[in-house]
Each structure stands twice: as C-alpha cells, then as structure tokens.
Amino acid sequence: MASPKTRPGVYSELYHRIRWARRVLPPLVGAVVVALEWWLHLLPPDPWLFYLQMVFYGVVGPLVMWLTLDWVSEEVRERAEAEAKLLEANQRLRALREVLSRSLSTENLEEVIRGVVNALADVLEADASLELEGYHWSTPSFYTRHGLPVRRLELTRSGGRLELILPESDDDPEFLELLAAEVDSVLEAAKARTRDFLTLFEVDEALKAEANLEKLLAGLLSKIIAWAHAKAGVVYLLDADGIFQPWAEVNMPEARHSFAPTGLWEEAKRQPTFVEPHLLAIPLYDKEPVGVLALRGNARALKEEMPFLRLLARQVALAVRNAQAYLRAEELAINEERNRIAREIHDGIAQALAFMALKLDLATRLLERDPERARAEIDTVKETLRGQIREVRRSIFALRPIDLERYGLLRSIERYASAFAEQVGLGIELDLADDVNLTPASEVVLFRVLQEALNNVAKHSGGRQVRIRLEATGEKGARLEICDDGMGFDPERPVSNGLGGFGMAQMRERVEARGGRFWVESAPGEGACVYAELPY
Image 1 (tube, rainbow, N blue to C red):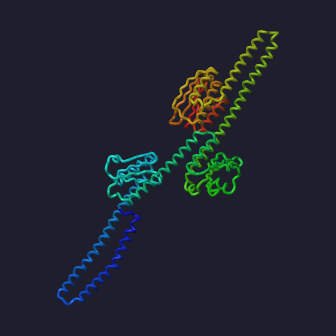
Image 2: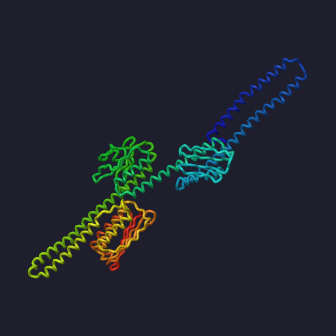
Image 3: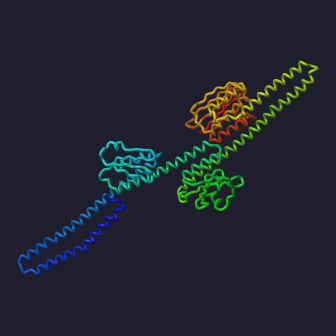
C-alpha cells in the first residue's frame, strides 16, 4: 500500500522509465532497420526478400509499439492503484485520527486506552490489544482468533505495546508505521494530561491536609519539581518590607538568604522571567504579588511547561493566602483567648478573692463579739473558695492540649467529653460516626470548636445535659453539632461574652478559615445548638 512519503517516488520512477524508453527505443529500432536493410542489400536478388521485408515492417513494428504501449499502460494502472490505495489509507487515517482525538476527551488513561482499541476495531475492522502503564484492553475476539498473524507494534514515546490482527489489505509495513505513530501520539498526550491532573490533585490534597505554611510550601515545591523534571527550586515570599524571604528550598542551598528584588527578580513579581539562563521565576500572584516560585532546569522544557506551571503557581499563591489567613485567625483567637482569661480573672477570681478578703476581715472582727456570725462568714468564704477552685480547674482543663495525632478525633472527643462532664457535673450524650475522614488541620478546628462550645455551656447556659453529634457529609467532609438544654439566648442580639460574643466569633473565624460553615440556633429558654461544618 502506498503512503504519503512514497507518492513522489511513484511519479519519479514512472517518469524515468518513459524517458528511458523514449531515448533508447527509437535509436534501437532505427539501428535494427538499418542493419536489416544493409543485410538485404548484400544478398543476391530474390523474390522472397520482398515478403521478408513486409513481414518485418508489418509485424515487428506494430509488435514493438504494442509492447511499449502495454508497458506504459501497466505502469499507469499501477500508479492509479497506488493512488487509490493512498487515498483510502489517508481517509482511514483521518477517520482514525478523528476517533482517537475524541478518545482524548475521556476522564482517565484507562478510558483513553479503551477508546483507542475501540477506534481501531471500528475504523480498521481489526482486533486489537493495547497495554500501557499497567492498563490493558482488547477487543472481545482478539484472543479467540487462533492461527492468524498478530502484528506487534512498539509505541516508543508512550512506552505502550499494541497488537493487531488486521485484514490482509491493511497488512502493510508503511501503513502500520503511520498507524503506530498516530496511536503513540494520542497515548503520549493522554499520559501528559493524566500526569497534569494527578499533580493538580496532589497539590489540592496538600492544600487541604497541611496548615503549617512552611511544611505546606515544602511539600508543594517537591511535587512541582517532580512534575516539571526540574533539578532544584525555591519559594520566596514577600514580607511586609517587600523583601524576598526563602520559605521552602530543594537542592538550592545558595537560595537560603533574604534579598530585596531588583532587575529581573523585580520583573518576576509580575510575569514569568528567566532570572538566570536555566532558572525560571514564576510570580505567585493573588490580587497582588505574594512571592515567586523559582525552578532550575532545562530552559526549553520549562518554557514548554509554562502554562501549567503558571496554573500551579496560582494554586501555591492561593495556598499562601489561605495559610496566612488561617494564621491571622489563630493569632486573633489566641489574643481573644488571652483577653477572655484576663476578663475571667478580673471579673471572677480577682473579685472573689477581694470578696473573701472582706469576709475574713469581717469574721476577724466578729470573733469575740459574735462567734456564730463569724463562723457563718468563714463558711461563706470556704464555699466561695471551693467554687473558685472548681472554676480554676475547669479553666485549666479547657486549656489543656489533647493529642489528636495519638488518639484520633473520635477517641479524643470521647476522652475530653467524659473528663469535662466529670469536672463540671454535666450529662453528655455522644453520637459519633466512625466514617468521618478529615485532614489533621480540620480535626484541630473541630476539636477547638467543641472545647469552646462546652466551655460556654458550663459558664453561661446553665444547662445540665449536652448532646454532641459528629457525622460525615460526603467522602471527606464532616459536621459537628453541640446542643444543650440551658437558658438559651437570641443569636440576633449577642451578649458581651459566651456564644453570642467573642466565643462565637472565634469559632466562626476558625471554621471559615478552613472553608467551612458555622452557625448557631437558639432562643431564650430553649437551649442552644452550635453547628460547625467543614468540607475536608
């Protein structure tokens, strides 16, 4: 079967043959005629010589012409057949290319392999088997057609292996070479797209799983370097003074210092720039410059991967902004917690100590005049002191860290709720689903919400019974619900502390910093329910 690269050869070969015949046959025929006439001239006169000449000119001449025309027509016929086969091959390749390109729109590599095999079966009427990176797919009848020749094609770019049982008309090496190139190109594109999707997925999972910004950037940088086949990399973040601070580095010890961006580094804050011949700096930009991601590697390869690298850089910038927002929320929560403890000490323990000091002074003065009243005042002081001791223990317990990594979220909630109930005398009912799958950072957020909510129940609600419910909201999300039977309040008219004030604000900020939702349902005299929902 002819192919595009052999078509010029067909015309060239036919042209040279005709030119050869045009140059050789006329002189050859002329030479034969001259030789015959010279030979006849040397012979003695004979009447049979006339008939010999008639036979020669009447038979040999037309025979030579017939052979020549037959040869030319055979060449033309072969050329026409080659063009017809070429046209058919091109049409089938175009149809195959169209079908193969549609298979690229599928979701994963396995679906692409299946689409390629089905395309070969539909367009070429062939049985096929394709294997690539552990995936394998074949037509149903491929392994049942025993005794038929199997063509094995190695797909060098993608690393796959294609086996075909073709009709005899398609068993042409050049056609199969073109076919293998088409399939190889499609599979290589599918592998690259799958690799891109996998990298995006890993980056997204890293964004959800790690709240520590330094560890997060180190993990993201390693994944990006592996995807881009780079040799080294560094992430610089801008501080408040506009100085590049190194936050993550792989195989670039020379990058472990701060500096003010100038020249090409200043340009890299706005657009991808090669600050060195083989060092590409990509801006981390989210409404305003955040920093740069720098990769060292082959300049040509980095240029080819530029669009996807910019997408990854946007993901990194988003991660930095989210982590910084989370850190700010944590700092605010810490400051608010300090203020709350200060208020509690001032409004609770400090005033109680002053009250007890006054009562003791009064009891001292009454010891001689009215011993019974003095003992009553001392009993009041003792009761107040016991109450303050319980309050201090409760506050210390609420601030005590719980090892979530050791016990896990469910076991930690059980341990904390049991100990808290024992400390403050609450009845707690637990309803915890065992299929909750959260990232470590999200587990910490939910646990802090639980601590704050129980603390508010003990201090402000006056309730005696609490229900804690934890349920999954999909493959990775969860919802925490804490309800009490206390006095309740109006969420639209927040009070100065507790659920209506700073406590609720702290919980809301922590939850929303992780992309979740926080809300409170309550009414005066009907208790309160706190809800926290996280997507991962």
